[in-house]
Length: 446
Image (cartoon, rainbow, N blue to C red; front, side):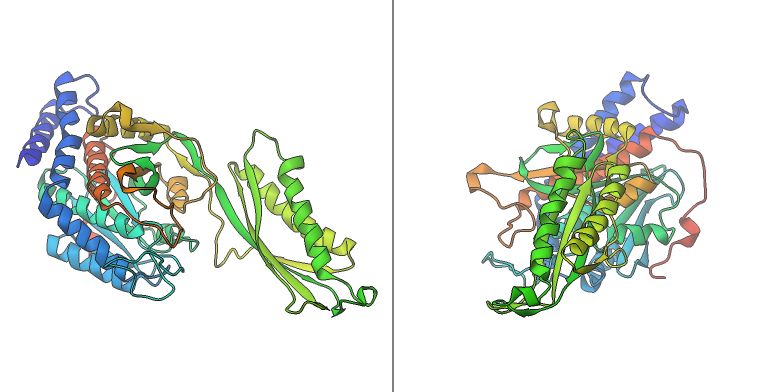
């Protein structure tokens, strides 16, 4: 196979020259540049495409929420077993971590999230979700298929890898902080770099979008119960109205961004939940509100958290109510800012340009969404990017988290090839100091 010949020839040059990098060798640069396109051509072969599509559709029909991805995890392990790839399981309840290569450093990780969303699918098609109230509406089914596709290609030339590619199949990205729990197990302690991707309907098929530095915001959630004294709506003077208090709280919370934050420091406070009362003519005893807050620096994030609690309690007292505030850190941990390592950004630029051409590399603006890949990139040099899937000939596409989200499966080869290329080129271009081997600790299941 042409791909294996290219990779083998590069490793031979590496051993012969005994240099840590190849920046001074035009010959090796030429050979390196051929790897991404070779992986893309391989990923586009009909047999592999049909296999990835089948994996994706099976997962799509059987969505599972965070830390409940038992059947998804079983499917992944079954496919890894067929490929002869060793792995650790369970990691953070349902997670799987596979290993391709020598079992020795350098270790480079590529990651896919596995969980679905708690929503009813509104798209009528042959492979619609079979589980009421659950749907893969964010593309995580495709992420798993892409990573397995990359694993299949990498395993075909695993004997030529001078290092180890770590496959990270992560549970509970959608609010559960699965990445944080995986890190806490120590399974990624020796990893030198980690790459993650997300499918996107904003960018065209065959293009990728990313940026160096902060790319996604830190995020947290909060809920408050504002208590007063209920009574008849015709006699408000005999009550302490928690609806009025909650309304004042919501208005004042908006001032935290418009009047307290630096206009050049992007922040968001949004109330998405307001529950109180059940009758037109009754003032309730209490009201529950809830929302999210976002920021791009740790300092701004902590300040928002502090002021949200102060405003809710203080404004409630003004209206003679009392309030309790819960940030639900145990169930919904705060997500840090997702920051892309600048050295890995250059690595990504080189690899993606060799595969897709410079015009298909889009430098995006930071967005206020959040990703628990941020836990990985906070602990390990990390890089996160978007893989385009927009095809305007098929009409407009809904963005993620919509019940009408439809995935363009033509994007699967691009994600698989990028995973494989980024990992392979990293092992070729970065020779890390020797550290503890993972080889001795590999098991089919823990």
